[in-house]
Amino acid sequence: MNKVIVVCGPTASGKTALAVELAKLYDGEVISADSMQIYTDMDVASAKATPEEQQGIPHHLLGFLDPAEAFSVADYVKLCDEKVRDILSRGKTPVICGGTGLYISSFVDNIQFDDSGSDPDFREKMRRIAEEKGAAVLLERLREIDPETAATLHENNVGRVIRALEVHHITGHTISEAKRMSRGVPSPYEFIMLTLEYENREKLHERINLRVDRMMEAGLLDEAKACFAQPDRPTAAQAIGCKELYPYFRGERSLEDCVEELKLRTRQYAKRQMTWFRRDERIHKISLSDTDGLAEAVEKARQIIAAQV
Image 1 (cartoon, rainbow, N blue to C red):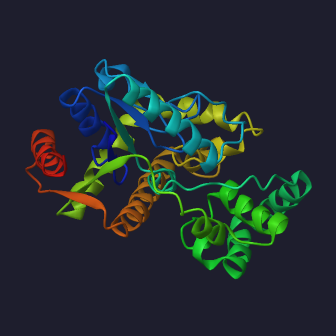
Image 2 (cartoon, rainbow, N blue to C red; image 1 turned 135 degrees about the horizontal axis):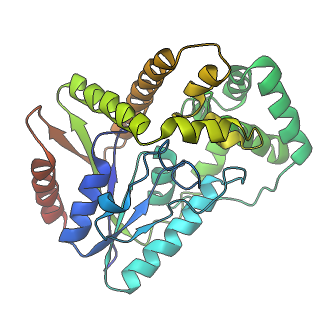
């Protein structure tokens, strides 16, 4: 009884709905693998599953941390492992669901993180550089030191870029080197990994655009305004769904332009997610046509799971 189902893929692809249905089928509980859904006060921006969408299925690692607090991949792996062990101990099936590839791969690969400590002065220096010269400067610096890790990060992930630079600063080795050294212990769990993809890319784009419209209807503007008023929460400022609306609050762009920018940035983010998950050959693709819905996705997932059990 150590089977763990993983549902991953791009934003707005239908991961949450599929994970809930699989949890219902296999007596499971859902564990979020989303780097923004862990935070409070960002329910709409992070597309956190509503109580109605959760359908009574227990969900874990949602909305438990203030956006001002730091949270690392190592923290996620530790908490996720605690949740998986607890769910399995009760005879239920863990269903990990999310689009943060680094969280998922680190947990599945049982990455052992070294306790390299921190250097607050160095981190503050890097933050100032990002503010004064732009986040792209930090990513380029990381690319010179650790091109492998830099290739997996976007310049907007300022916290992770700084952490990668900090690890090298403290230890003299890169995060990618540390990862290779940490893969010696196999995971105690067996994973069945699934990802949702659409045969027609435009279908996903339509879903993304519709989601953004619904997020605006659900109060995204008020949520983003609250984040804008609290500059001490850098994580919120980086989140897709908040930062795209800030030019509107500053009077620099119209709300309509900002919403269109949000849709564009979300589509670009989805493309990066798909690129990440396609690199992992262990992940089974659930390919959906224009006419396929949740029922078809569930049936295809069920067939894949049956073949793996």
